[in-house]
Image 1: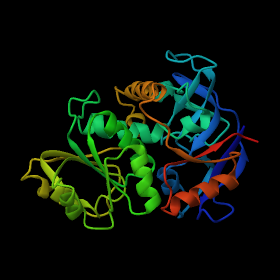
Image 2: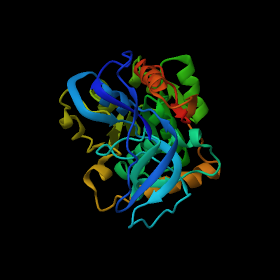
Image 3: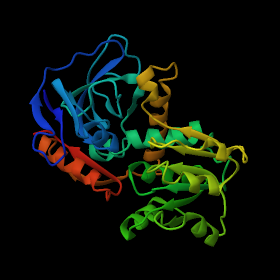
Amino acid sequence: MKAVALKRYLPSSHPESLLDVELPDPVPQGRDLLVRVHAISVNPVDVKVRAPKDKTESSPRVLGWDASGVVEATGPDVKLFKRGDAVYYAGSLVRPGCDSELHLVDERIVGPKPKSLDDAQAAALPLTSLTAYEAFFDRCAIDPGGRHSGRTLLLINGAGGVGSIAIQLARLAGLRVIATASRPESQQWCRDMGAHHVINHRENIPQQLAGLDIPEVDYVFNTVDTAGYWDTMCDVIKPFGRMVSIVESSQPLDLSRLMGKSVSFSWELMFTRSRFQTPDMEEQHRALKQVVEWIDTGRLRTTLTETLSPINASNLRAAHARLESGKMVGKLVLAGWR
């Protein structure tokens, strides 16, 4: 099968940072699906894993954690899918990635592809949808059915891949969404996704919230810089509020700042279930099915903004460079092999 892989960890501008390779076709075992990949998406995790370091792989390492395709074969214990089913999923960090023509993935973290979307539109969604879904409905215990309607959410960095779907999920749950963005095009994108208010994260956030007559918020979701916005998050969260972040911190966080308000802080990593094979792993299958229902009934929309074709090393290097620029709005997808 064709694949894009790395052997050395190099800058995206280096012609050998990602390579076109031929690899043996994988064979499904247990609850594996063998998926013929039609489209893939890039995420910050791809850039982070590929980042330059003094390390060499003995065999090609395939990255990629967003895919849409069709089930080619199944392992003997598969219960949820059959050959020919169209699927979408994010995969696992502890297995080869999906930047390959054929890919193995545990069926418990796979969803049926939305019928109303093509492969490129579907491939934009799994990782970010699962991240925002778990952040809100698991970590923050927000009711997707609207029981917490009217509560306020500060979403720091609303125009990225996670932020784009997070705005929509928060609106679906009835929250009042204040998203941050710094450039006119990213601010407009947040409004297009449904944010009630858009403020600038490069300016004083508490002052901007006060100007909206929202001095404190019920929830904070940080998708860009935990340590950099920690004091701001602590300042604007309400008593008994909940904060969640998807960005690891290289600096210690002063959790004592949360005690006076009895605030909860959580990390969210959608790879936790697959990495540790948790007993509730199939929750990701159910979450992806729920997202499909919302997509196919028009309550959510794809966050795809750009498509490159075909899937090859040159286009993937360009995609990594786009993410590294810090100016990506929505999601970038690669579709089709040649």
